[in-house]
Length: 300
Ligand code: SF4
Image 1 (tube, rainbow, N blue to C red):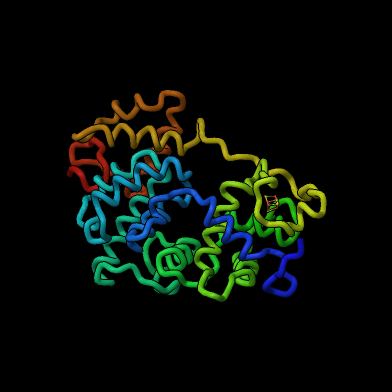
Image 2 (cartoon, protein in one colour):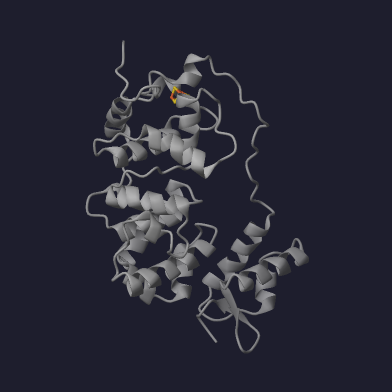
């Protein structure tokens, strides 16, 4: 069957992708009508380094408890850290709290809608700024995460994987694909969804893919040229130790002693010290006047 392609040289059909997206997208609550830009921004903070399944329950509780930036800003830093739970990379929670404070104070409790102003907010980088502009305000800006890079590498460039990232090249790649008929925000969500659910890194399910002119498939799946990327381990890392120490502090209504923290990680004392020092340096944990430890801002 012949396909009419909207852009010369481009083989990725927005119509195919959008039809598939309308039929097959996951029912994710931050995509529902009525979800505010602030609540979408919260989802983007959480999704930066955490899978959807783990984000879902935390996001739902979060937006019920703190539906606006000002509500989040009024919460204590310790409450925000507790609510972050086990999403990992807890510096994001601190940055989200700071971001809420700036939006409430400097932007009348309204998330800015342009990428330039979004980039001035604490914790908002290139990806998050564009994701919020696109998904909350329907702006036709390129939103490029690892899933999008992989789909573009395969479908458009005929390569097995995307290789090293380059913000300028990646944005140019995706900008060239965006439809200019008002559907760019849906197209971006669809591209991301395809990478997350069908064109996955290890086992692309090409039989379910809507893209009939994928260059990698048509070329017979040539292998990647670079070394295979290994998944990052978690067990035994400083990240795991930091998580264990934070668990002790989250579970306690009162400051805890160093001996209580020591029990959280007995394997390697120097690693435990390093993790605790980094939590103190990151401002996630404080030392009380009597030498015990607490979540930031919770006790003195
Ligand atoms: S045909 Fe296969 S490799 Fe190509 S975009 Fe679809 S899922 Fe990915």
